[in-house]
Image (cartoon, rainbow, N blue to C red):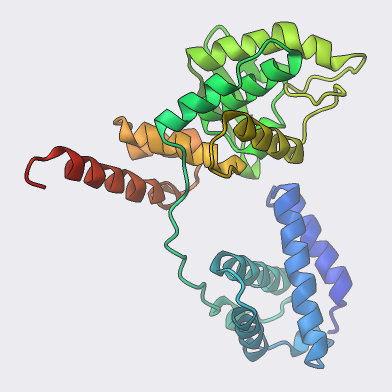
Length: 299
């Protein structure tokens, strides 16, 4: 039986969207990964999925290593290929056993970057202001640090998801898994000020329920959040470069440094696996070591 490559790809994309509930970004990454793999197969003279063998997949992985792709990138591409051929096995009875033998490269032991508490104080102080824009930016910064939520989760929050009476926010995470995350007094005050005073001004004539909006009153995008965070750091004169996940890393690190248990942090972050959260223990262990070396008289 001949399997049409493009039709199979489109059916697979529909499958991961509807049945697996993958996000738009994850789905797009899968599609791009597979198109690149198909292009490689074409260069190798393979134009039928039935002709693809384990050797071709291994050659492709070797090519990625030779191009010095990051291990995380290679690992994701392997996952894309394995998932696609598992789907072909299910729907087209194509043998996928050779592709399940593709192994993931070991992760690079790069620890997440985070802000120290002193740096965060500087960041918050530098971004206090009275204009609608400044009130919005402080509210956004406070909420990210108070909850550790992903930027993709932040931009999808609606007004109805925020419960000010209980200081809890409803978040829709990866795989459309819902969770509730508490936020503290600083975030509470900044958010109330934003919702009651700044947001109505920024909204202009727009009509929607998205919590954070841009200067035109339209829903804020992930790209817009990155722009705001860069602006926030510039105002503070901190030398650190910022990326959205850095505040999430800071949230987790500070909780663990101050005695929170790993399972609680896992739940707050919305990690499916505890192993994803355990990377922060390396940071806290290093923090303990430095504290010991600085404080012990005979260290």
